[in-house]
Image 1 (cartoon, rainbow, N blue to C red):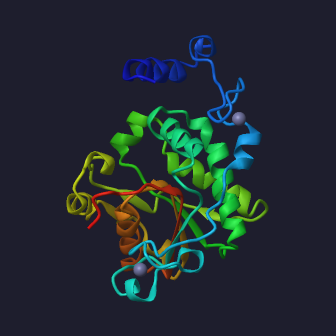
Image 2 (cartoon, rainbow, N blue to C red):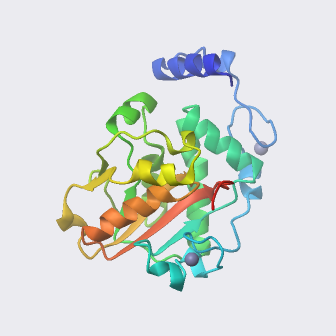
Length: 252
Ligand SMILES: [Zn+2]
Ligand SMILES: [Zn+2]
């Protein structure tokens, strides 16, 4: 969709006008069949990654995406599970629609993929699920936090009958930052996110195993910064899970 179409689309979605389907018919982004964003057949074709790498150096294959021995010294993160590949065209299209074209209903299919990855790697269940927060200003603009939608689905899917706790009020983004995607320089991206997050209540996360949820990551800086803030505030272990990781060409 072009920018103008996107604005009209968001307006129509916000106002919930029935004409939406007439102007913007929905077709599966994989096969084109009508009335769904991604059909069940196309969802089934998406491959869960069969190998995971250390999220810091991205060079060493580790079990479940744990941080490798050498990188442990420089990171508060325990590991990061990457569900699938951004090279899958359905994934890149779906994430784009979800994140930048406000198609929030795609959280259902995207969380399905993440949940499948968590189950196939048998990732231990956390004490607490925390979505990567948006700044209040960006939340107002987008109308929803895409990571919170995913986190809600995951909390339900992973342990439907228990109270797997999801807290979106413990970690907050107190500083408005430029979108990481808009910054080309590797080091500038790292600086951009430093000091952007605060823990509101340390007693809730003390000695807890936390699962951080984000939609996609590129450099990983946002997740690394959240992990470091949570660890400094007393969390025992911080694991992250994302739908996919985009390649970052400028990485030195
Ligand atoms: Zn399809
Ligand atoms: Zn490493």
